[in-house]
Image (cartoon, rainbow, N blue to C red; front, side, top):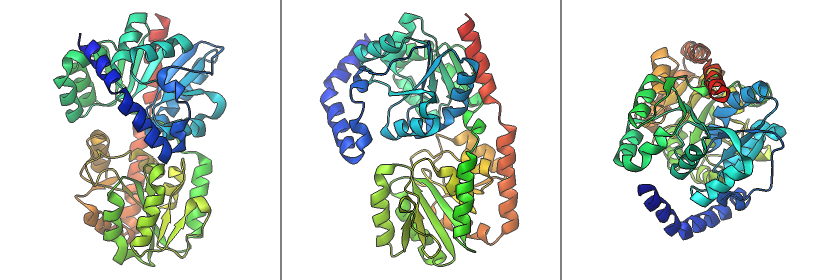
Length: 416
């Protein structure tokens, strides 16, 4: 009954869904592509049995890479289908996997659309990366006997409370998961409390991501082009954070250190460029190949180059954490050996932040001013920078192996 009400609300909200898609397409042309796929209409077909992995956006696509590559190696007689929901995620699928996988948008959670999706691709197995609970999709998978794995599952306290408030609707979805591979014991306990049965701790797939050597080389080249200056990367910043950080850094870094500003979402590149100029700082744009040697700010307005920006930096301030967005992934910076500074709002990555702080790889601050103070203090202390960088690399090395544990769980399901 509750699922029927949920589906009815989706139908009532269809004009808003279509309007929002149209508005986003005006800002990001990628949203104008594959519109039929949003409603279960697909042109591409797989000639081989399908293993399906869903990664909602860019971060999840990159996190899924070790698992997707392991599936391709372990099951060469299958096609791996990788789905997403965002235009940036679709672009990331192309960047990370190229033609080695089949990429598509997952349809909206209308019953007819998810049935079309499953009828078209007929996957043997579904894998949802991190926290992707789709009510009608999981109900239809359960009805068909299609096993679905929640991979690298995470669940914050706030998200768990929200799911509990709607337990009559969400509990059957969690109960329908064949296996949950959680990131941590806390994540496992929260997910189990929501109704999931086969829950184990398998670790975080992000620790298994290996930076592309070509991107590390590009970062080294960028570092050489800066001359003798240090660089601070403001990574994966969200709306409102760039203004706070530019104000905090503006009077203290001019001519001494380069700020590399990398907004989280590509549709904001132009507005952030305008913000930098309005702040009185000189700016070069990476996408235009403009030299960074003599400017205050390099705008990282390219997709897929975050490892290069980290490799060029002496200190990383990881965004999404200075305002209540929940944080962004800091594992990538740690793996490259960059000291990390992160703000107070990290509920989406709380366990990883705790591990990084305890290991001495990261510092947590309260606001943008403290972030600027901490970053500049690290620039004046090469010894501490080196120690934090080494601690981050060691932390990532120690927590690798999640992919093998996920593959073992998937193998058991496919053998049934």
